[in-house]
Image (tube, rainbow, N blue to C red; front, side, top):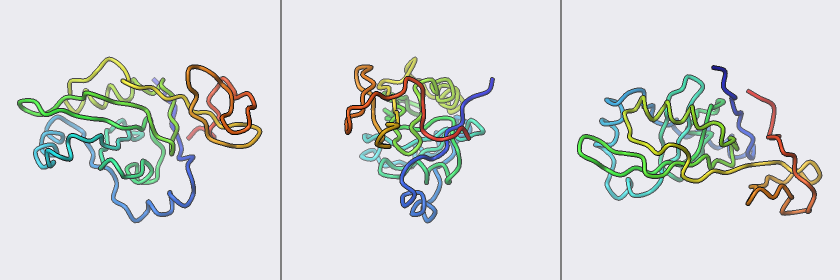
Amino acid sequence: MSRRRYRYVGPPEIAAAATDQSTGRPMRSTTDFRAWVDRVDPRELAEPFTYVVDVDGVLRLAPRHSEHVACAGGGPVLAAGEVTFVRRTGGAAVVEVTNQSTGYCPEPSCWPAVAEALDRAGLDRPGGFTAEFVFRCCPRCAELNVVKEAVFVCAMCGDDLPASWNLGAPA
């Protein structure tokens, strides 16, 4: 199944600064995730983590205040957002997961890539995003918008926003 690849569409200065940051920790298996979560401070685990699903379908995790573009090593992704875990015997489970990334602006339809990556990491997970975000760029003023309540109107200039995703060329 062919999946949309999202290129970084955020501010260039953030992408430039991200080249000095480490990429997200890959979670290719249950073993990878358990080894990682055993080293995470419980106070840190209470906060959401930045994640991407890279073009190989691998979940990559980074601390919450990391930029998605750094987590992805600057490359395109199949999905990006934030994820929150809760510890359980033998590992952890996902309690919240979103597609909230203003750097990649992935559509909610990226969920299958996220679900497969979480499954590969051996995580119990919800059946979909716990919060979904719809992003559009205003054709008139070029402002990034988060569409709320299915109202496709630019928050800055009041112009109509397109119904289809319009944030950069496909990767």
